[in-house]
Amino acid sequence: MSEHGKTPVTVLGLGAMGTALVEALLAAGHPVTAWNRTASRAEAVAAKGASVASTVSEALAANEIVIACLLDYDSVHEVLDPVAAGLKGRQLINLTNGTPGQAREMGAWAEELGAEYLDGGIMAVPPMIGTPAAFIFYSGSGSTFGRARTALDTFGGVNYLGADPGLAPLHDIALLSGMYGHFIGVIQAYALVGSAGVKAREFAPLLRGWIDAMSGFLERAAEQIDDGDYVTDVVSNIAMQAAAFPNLAKAAAEQGVSAELLAPLQPLMDKRVAGGHGAEDLIGVIELLKK
Ligand code: FVH
Image (cartoon, rainbow, N blue to C red; front, side, top):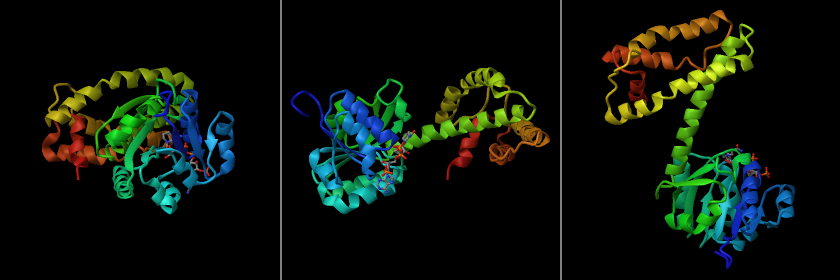
């Protein structure tokens, strides 16, 4: 940490997200050295006070704390492999989207080079960075998390999950899975009513109300999963749902709409019913996902 309680940071990657991170750091007074493959993209942050490194080596030499926010893990390796020796003594914080396995591999690689490694999963889009709406999962080196904490706090809320670098991307991907599942239903619903000329804007309040009402399912499902008990005390058991679910595909076909987004659930429901779990809740399908 510098003498005024500010943490000098290097940021590799000035795409939409990297630029937002640099802007948040600069706005809070943290000195930033930035590098980007396409040099012209550094002009905007240079105008706001960032130092721009012309090479990755120069960027690594500038500060002990190094944040990478690149397209994917391959690009992180492409950028760092040729200058790997420069990572010795650095705290590498990788905010690039990836999988738990990729994070663990990169953590082991960085440690072999004498660097500490902290992985992060950003739960925000760039305009949210620096606002209370953003939060980031971190896991990996606890000492790096502690040393970088004042800088990391400028991005939004933090949630440190422990020493396993894979935990941050695991939580990130789990939340994204929930989000995409949600998007699937919303897209299908708009496509269906749209096929009858109903404007999406007109339907939106109905969809919002229904989804809000159904979201109460989430906590009850968590209890059932943790208890391993899917016996339902409500009236919507999976046998009833498996019998009604084909109507979603039939209605879509009648309206000239594809039901391919929803199709994978039917065979899983049928399998669960065939396995003798018809009186239980839909959430018991989770047992069929375990490999
Ligand atoms: N933007 C978003 O909404 C999401 C929110 C959640 C987190 N993601 C992840 O953040 C990573 C960076 O995303 P981004 O939005 O900054 O992405 P781009 O604007 O496309 O910028 C990509 C940067 O990566 C550089 N880059 C790509 N390939 C290479 C390479 N082979 N060598 C060096 N640099 C590379 C690219 O450089 P340039 O094209 O400007 O030269 C950009 O700096 C990402 O993991 C998201 O999933 C964002």
